[in-house]
Length: 102
Image (cartoon, rainbow, N blue to C red; front, side, top):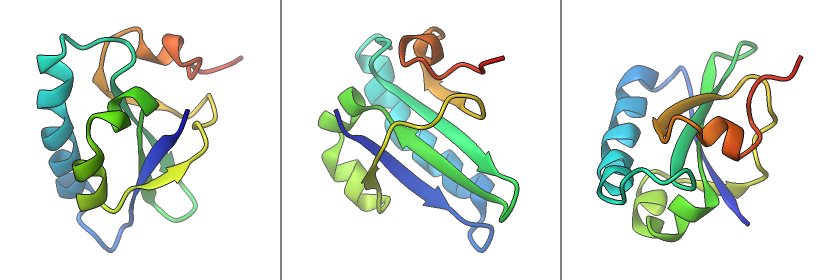
């Protein structure tokens, strides 16, 4: 299954851009009754101040035009640990095995 990544840089207004991404995808997730398979996640890169937003594979299959409009690229599943749930079912981190490992 293919994940998608939207890379946000400090040169952009990350807060505003992330809000735009969340606002675009949230209605699709909510209309679908927020299944665990439909989720947006994010990671913060302390080295360069960037944020990566990850779109789950199942959500990506129904949002291809949105992915293109935000310049999303296919990627590997994010590494567990520094991942936050942006939008989706409260159990999505566990469902995708992305919760913080100790």
